[in-house]
Image (tube, rainbow, N blue to C red; front, side, top):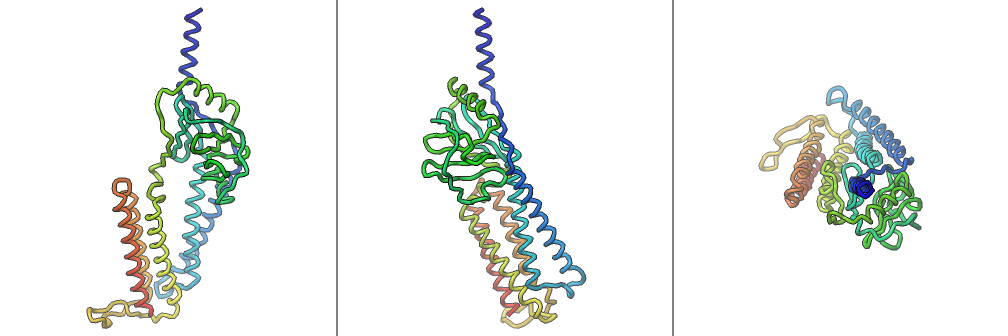
Length: 321
């Protein structure tokens, strides 16, 4: 009898020592992300088709004007929207909650939040009233980001509204979760807490290396990338506005004394912002590869992109006016 009891106890301990996976409740957030992705890809398709039409034929017949700039802006906006929607859809499809004796692990799209079980103070149902700073966008795919309740920060990792979620409270923050079977999830979590931890964990947020979160979350890097992009778009815009009134041949090169050295076809004015864009893209790619080992070097590369864009912008202004 004693041996049977001991064996059952060992099996129970082994079962709780292993990690258990919990899926979130199914919700309409993933369909919102899919719908936005389809709309964004539609915008990309329309913009590409029109730009190809405008640039078909010989360079002398290219239709470059303010309308072309509008389609270019639509292409860029649609691409960004498609990438964001695809990421939100991936987050919804990969969101899981895992529990072992040491911690609760929230995983999505290669990211992971670790909540040590010994840091959990209490578990409640529902939080409110909750303010979502990004409004409806924080419901796409899953409820994501940070919400404000007037108390501890509330971090959203759920497919349901915060008022319908399990709220995990620690001393520093609160976490909104929506497992498929909330009662069984809480029971499993409490049983593992009662067993005691076998390993000391620290609360942490581990970002996926695939999406280079650290690079894009660096405010200096982000500001420089956006500045380079805006200057480049300004150069494209100036060319688009002036292009219809340009002569077939424009002054493209000057010698050391500032005198005219050569006339070039007007379509070559497009190559200046294109070349600047290519250099910025190269610097951004290099910065992504460099950031983990040398953040300062990555920031300097983005700063160099801004300087290059400014130089090309000055060249465009000199040529057009």
